[in-house]
Length: 327
Ligand code: XMP
Image (cartoon, rainbow, N blue to C red; front, side, top):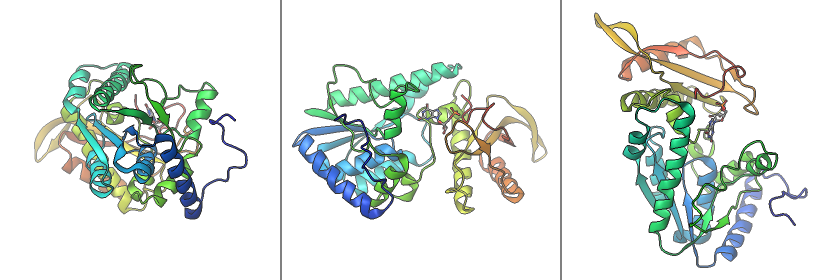
């Protein structure tokens, strides 16, 4: 039978009970596939790779080597959370790669959105391959492929981003324990594995990270303004009970400045755009309308706490015609 096909008889995993039995079954399968071999995993901290990491740690412990690449475009606190959860709490064999300068130096002056995405994707594979080559005796590569990835690549909608891309000399056998699961099932499994809610119920986050929210040529100061304003927005959504209700919310700091005034002095700084959207399939998106008091509070916090920002704007545009991300 095609092992990329979800059998009709497979029940949807909605309960902890079902998740625990899935986990037991996968632990057995992983152990029999891997034996005493070593497995490599690119651990981004996203839902899918985190759940795969937790499953493999349960099955084979330190035979799993996790590589977390910090490309400098992650949200505030993310690399620290990956280290805390996996290295400190789960005793994972975790390699943390600080590639911030490498990525930001390569991206300096690059304004074209597609070129930016391309550079980030290519460099990520390079950094990961370099780490892989430093490791002795790896024969398996674990991936957080999920069922929609398989369906979409079969239908030709998008290339299966979890497959391919790695240099050919890295000849690994794949371990893909959640490849027949839908996203909601992956979350139930993650919860049953003891991962924190902030990881399991995370909003979608693009691979090129904050890079696509810092339109045009990325500079470190403007990137920092995106990261800090995003952290404030997330904190306020959490406090106001919106984080589980709104599909995706983030800030963008575009590359233009406008005149303002602060403490009686002229300023010339960037605007910060807030985007908060709802959707079911991401093809069509509606805008979340925030309460006035929350908007006022966000404006106050962002202009007083984030260096380089003197205006806060709200994006009221649905998709279509606008995409969710700015690049
Ligand atoms: P757009 O901007 O295309 O975004 O309307 C739709 C959804 O996809 C996310 N997105 C990405 N996710 N890699 C990802 O894994 C990417 O390169 C990427 N670009 C956009 C976006 O955040 C939104 O949820």
